[in-house]
Image (cartoon, rainbow, N blue to C red; front, side):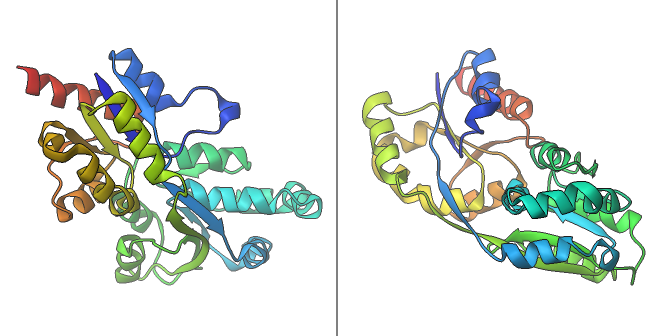
Length: 265
């Protein structure tokens, strides 16, 4: 059975995409179609703030893209040197809160120690942070996207935990999305399941998928990588057959297997 994953592929240097690999273990034939493009902004401002760890109580990351922004900064020799010689060690005396395993692994790549990676979503991460941070302590630095949800900032504000947000990337539709979807449906047919990985993916893909699927759309089992994406799908009128228990390849594959197995019973 075919599964369509509406997400960006993993870096080519790091081997096969873990979602395709895990779904393959269940006998699914998975295909990735990139949905989003990212434009990085305010990188000088970002590194200026990273250069002053004494001003902050720690870091918060809810997206791999925020780490990509830091990695772009560190491509400059002078900034990389400053980070390696002193800044990294100084930030490591403070927490680096993360929302999931993918973000955690990127935090480790820049030499920091992630905390809270089992949270899985912004709501649970906010609870985790509030259980560890004192009200009115130094602000946590939160590099984020222009489309960030307000769940985490609102939860921290209500508990008196200061947060300083900085927009470091903007999200747009991938230039080849419509063509890629058309090619997939014409060559592969209607997939058994389609997985959304973000509310932006729902926004950019749904209209094309409805048009390409026609009357067969009711045969597709739609899956979400997490509750935030599931909410966006439901708001758009998509029946959610499966929401991964955690944002991991293993949890998603198990959820899709169960959803499709129930269909075939």
